[in-house]
Length: 235
View 1 (cartoon, one colour):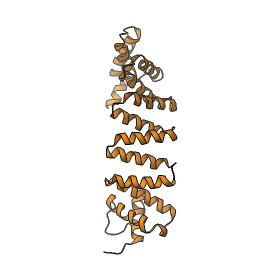
View 2 (tube, helix red, strand yellow):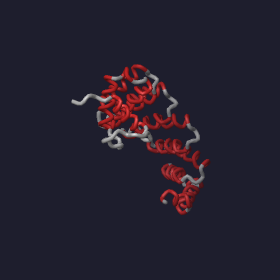
View 3 (cartoon, rainbow, N blue to C red):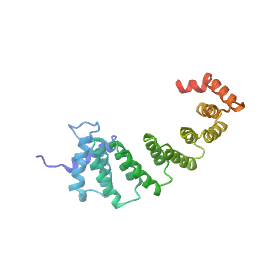
View 4 (cartoon, rainbow, N blue to C red):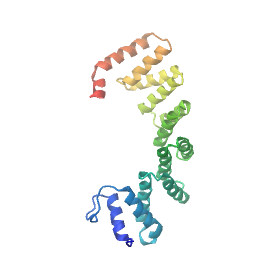
């Protein structure tokens, strides 16, 4: 067995982290090879930690974690994530990567459990709220998904996509009157929002409210369907 070449391994891993570096080692493709990264990174982490700087060690450690995910070795990746979290429970990226490892494994319930715990600490993380909401939707837990998107509205009240999602979910659980209020809030600030106007129309129809608002929503839908807004969507 050939002796492990630490200098060469470090050079290879450095190139995968930054492809602009010169002098890529001969006989190796510059195309990302997760199996090679996993093998080189694991060897350095286990046998040569004291031979490199802390900064390079953590960079290689992160590369190795990602390579385990890329090669389907999810349990090994989770073990390494847990080791990181034992040293620093406030490491947000590691928490989120561990959660996504469970998502990749198809263990939605475990991912939800970890996300709920994560958001108890990092409650301002909008990306995590979106992920949790989408996971709840995958399990048809509409009420829980609604809670997530209501939290997003509190965090980003001007984000009309979150407002529309809340409106959609209220309709999904049969609360069309509340859904209509959210749709109206969107179209008042975004007059050409076809989604919003259709939501108003849909709610009015389900509530059997065929007055002026119903007629206005119907006319706006027809206008927008013929105008440049819908053309931009399908261009």
